[in-house]
Length: 288
Length: 159
Image (cartoon, rainbow over all chains, first blue to last red; front, side, top):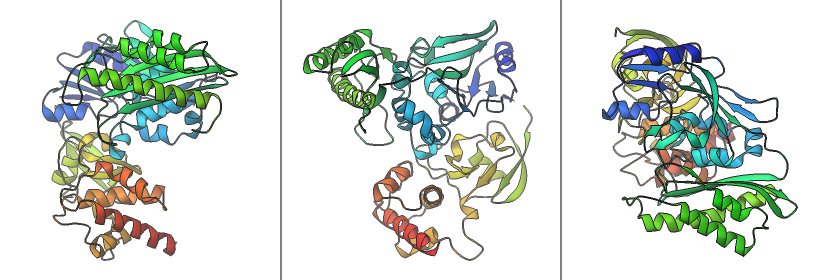
């Protein structure tokens, strides 16, 4: 196995494009090393991205949004009070990934590129309308987070593509987000269903919303119908019923040992209702 | 590929070793540096027996490559006692009989020390969540949690 530590994303992209055999990028390594250990993925080329300048940074962008480096760990996100004040749902999603030890290394981009439909940090990013900056052979482009997962373990990234940063938009006033998942245990488990909602209020009325679900379809999914059910409402019972129905209609889950398709669909609706209430409370500045 | 020369600091001492890039930090600590206090329970980041800190951050050393240790500062269970004098956590684990087979103990001690450095006055719930990634099949955890709480209390009093 060849091991590279490029000092720029352009070099990382070229190395990946020119490599033969199986190539993996290494950030936190909490999925890649497990796959190497089990023998399911034995890379011929491993490209460690952590020595590239800026990969450890959490920085405000000039427009008031955030740029998160690809090697920022969950532990670092969880310690960043200013980011949590803006995007608590994004951070609480990431903090549900794995143990304290895993949090010390695991990254948002790794969770995204692992391609799990149950990735806890991805619904929050999708609801937040986050995007990723991709450095590829033809230059740098920006792509919405929801366009990256292609199916379990698969992404839409092409050979030579490497994600070089996560961009989260400015939070703005009177807005809040939240993420919850269901697991049989409280810790160290994988989501059976998850839901993230980001919304903005004008007085008591919801003026903007984005709803994303996890673990109930082959990919994390944005649910525009569920957002439409919220927009223009005051989160009254009728709006919640419409939200729950739209979320359940968007579910296309599998049956497995963690939950049946019927159960996942039911729970996704329950989570949507709870998460909407938390996000609404946060948007209105009520302590949550 | 040939082995890679790695220079790093382990428990305050500069060390160097030659690592195959596929070897984990745990492999390197145990097989190249003879530091066998960190244990391999699962090898997949689930059990916490290989817990160490890297630049002050708690991690599973089975989920990091040895070559990634270049230029880092690593603390392992071997650096916890001060000579013959046990760390308060170690002493409280003995007093509370917070171990039976002992295989998980180095990882739990390293993890608990990292917690108390970040939060000297944790609630029992905070201790339980922090240590959720450290599995113990003997004790049922109760004595471990009591030992950590007691050590935290003593360390606050001593400070």
